[in-house]
Image 1 (cartoon, helix red, strand yellow):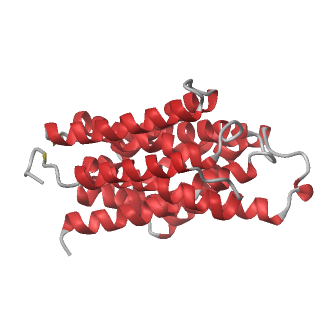
Image 2 (tube, rainbow, N blue to C red; image 1 turned 90 degrees about the horizontal axis):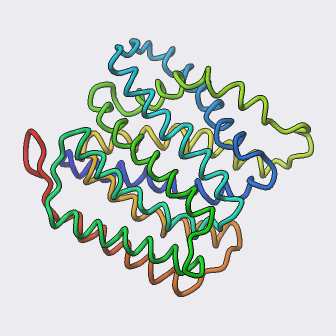
Length: 294
């Protein structure tokens, strides 16, 4: 299997794992403080990451890599989880899943400056059309106005895209799973206290199903999903593979309907299909980088 194809496959599996993030967050949003959901899941993942790094005796990152890991952590460990947790208190998971489809375009923009990738004009046009569709959907669903939750989701998308681009570039040096593990470990001292301060007063009153969803966020969305996602970005190219995430809204909508009983309107279906069509077209657009032409 060609390197780029392998990267696309790994990226798709990672996106499939991420697609349950918003429904799981929505499910537990009524039981936990948003800060606890966002940072608590990262704290649990960080403990597992420490164990993994120790078992495989990974060397410490150098100073430059540590700076990049700090940026990655700001995006995908603090910014995105916390902001989406707040947003889930005001919007449905299926709606949010389409709004954060802005991430692929934003990731490609960051990749342009961070990793030296040079997407073609045609690529930007198609990606821009996909972003326009997403913005139009958000406006229509909010009665032609952005909801507070949408603003939080847009901010989360910016930080998440930055974390993807920086982490994807760094994965070419450290490896995909090493990047997310080190990012979690570096952030752990800073997120532990807020996690403890916002934890529930009575753990016994929270049902097992809530904890199962929380553990999914910690172990799959915050840790193991990134093993595949960052490896995919490193192998297939950040701008190229990041566009697979436009499939996430469709997968999220299906999950929201199946697991949360949310309604599915025709408008959501039409916009989701249109956005997915944009990514299918953009995959055929050329992307140049410092070393070769993809």
